[in-house]
Amino acid sequence: MTTTQHDESVAISVRDLRQSYGSFEAVRGVSFTVSPGELFALLGTNGAGKTTTIETVVGFRRPTGGSVRVFGLDPFGQPAQLRPRVNAVLQRSGVFEELTVAETVELARDLAADPMGTAEVLAAVNLAEKAGIAVRRLSGGERRRLDLGLAILTRPEVLFLDEPTTGMDPEMRRETWQIIKDQVENGTAVVLTTHYLEEAERLADRLAIMHRGEVRVSGTLGEVVSAWGDRIGFRLPDNLRSQDLPRLPDAEAALDVRGGDPWAVYTVTGPDTARRTHRALAALFSWADEHFLTLERLEARPASLEDVFLSVAQGDLADLPER
Ligand SMILES: Nc1ncnc2c1ncn2[C@@H]1O[C@H](COP(=O)(O)OP(=O)(O)OP(=O)(O)O)[C@@H](O)[C@H]1O
Image (tube, rainbow, N blue to C red; front, side):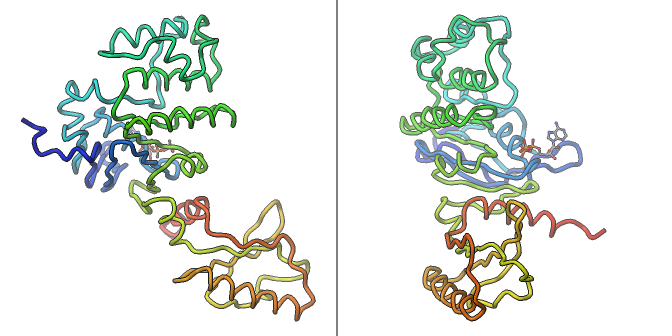
């Protein structure tokens, strides 16, 4: 038996995964676990290795190093045992363009052991009104929704979603988030890749940010952003240069550009960040008063997932060899 040692509280276990295309190593030692009823978001820069990771965990590729287990089974070596329990919405979907939406669902149901009913699936993904039209006539977002319907109709215990809301307008995206949340609430373990950071903020129980084949940051959203401290920002007053900005306690100054305007951005880190931010703001106001300046569009806020993401992405520049 291959499943005797498996810990049922872990649906997916990825350890030191490596994946190469020829001599190019696209995934370089990625590890994570996902439990039933948990959504794990895999974020990252373009070409970071998210799709390669998902395709390997789904079982399309044999890992070149490390191990992947889904319910204790090897997805590449034991696909038949996992097929009824796992489904995926990948970037390339293989549906017949000339079939209607309902026929496409029927076809997928024929291949499933205990599928949802056609009407139930179409209602779940809000495509009931499109049942009779050909797949080729669907909009990009509707097509993505059909892909999701085809994946959930098998009632998977593990669901992989590779950029599932690409091409959707904000309203359809929000509706789709609810469909994904329902899956997680029903106990499905979900791995999601996305370029929409808000999607990860709304859905992820835990997340990882990949860059150049490696996980650079991981944890819950709270854990990830709290390590990045607070941000104090304001539009740089006219006639002021960056070197005129004051030094603030426990804060590091940088210059940014927003909407064409130069911005001063201070990053406050360290234990008891709230207290440190308070002191930095007090010092900033004293400096502004002394110089008879009014700070425009002043903000003080915790770091956002976007701040963390950009820090990881900018690591790219630091990693580049000097020209
Ligand atoms: N079949 C392949 N052959 C060779 N290289 C590949 C192949 N597929 C992907 N790559 C390369 O591997 C790296 C990781 O690609 P991957 O598609 O996994 O990244 P990603 O994080 O999903 O990117 P994106 O966010 O842009 O979709 C990229 O540099 C890509 O060019």
